[in-house]
Image 1 (cartoon, rainbow, N blue to C red):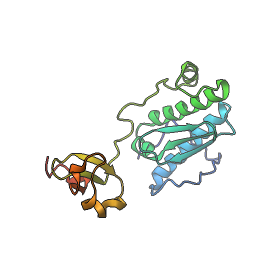
Image 2 (image 1 turned 180 degrees about the vertical axis):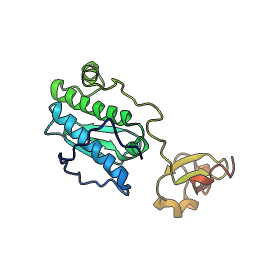
Image 3 (image 1 turned 135 degrees about the vertical axis):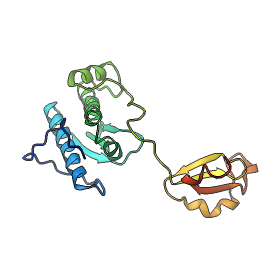
Image 4 (image 1 turned 90 degrees about the horizontal axis):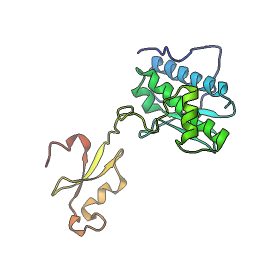
Amino acid sequence: MMTFSVFPSPRSVLCSPRSMTIGNLQSGNRDSFRDIEIYARLKMDELGLPDWKFGWDRARRRLGVCRLLEKSISLSVHFVRANLEAPHEIRDTILHEIAHALAWTRHGERTHGPRWKQICREIGAVPCAAAKPDAIRVTTYKYLLRLKTTGEVVGKYHRRPAFAKHLKRMALKGRPDTLGQLELIPSEKQDTSLS
């Protein structure tokens, strides 16, 4: 695994870990995550946000988040794992979220407005509201709920839903013709049947 050249690695700086664990990371990745956390903390302190917290979350549909009222910034563990070979993407996301915090503390601005864009330029972030489409990988679902008759997918689930045992007695809302026509299949089987 490639080490980060963009992020400093001062071993003398200690960052207190957040309550959320990163999961089953290999030791090489664990060092990378630690370096990212140190970089974010140093950057937040440097830019005047010493009372803000940095942490990790398990979001799959966004790269990072700045929670203004909680005074916290967090990055998606999944995004970071997917982009360990592209540290500039991670660095830009950290700066993007720091720009939100600065726009809020300085101007009370919550959006991707002109003041936020100006702060992005000042601190070296790309002033863009949305990430590149391939920056975060598409979420894979373990189960699909579909109609037996047409193969139309009507629901996607990460876990087997509790209602799965009642599918024979269920219909889609507003579609009584679907009574007993729903089936839950593993997502990898979707293409092999009925398509």
